[in-house]
Image 1: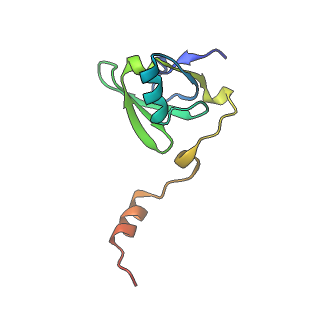
Image 2: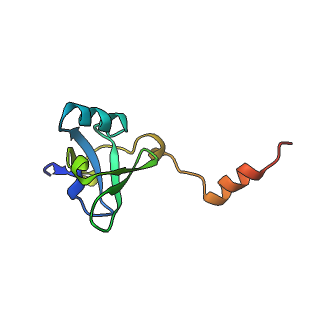
Length: 107
């Protein structure tokens, strides 16, 4: 499968980052935000006019301008051997369980 621009993928698609292109400052900023090669990214939603995009990766949500997202070349996750990285690899506790943890008193 060929590489595609992240900003052009439909909502709900998962893909693995292959490389980050563009000006040096943009590449550095995207890499610092966790968009490293091999990272699995899911397109969560788009704003009504298509910009910005909400992404889910490494256990957090990230919003990017479409122009910036198009500097990221990805391969469909099903066609790669990349595994989810970081917090994505572990199951998150249910919201009720987290609320109970915050309200429990020490013994």
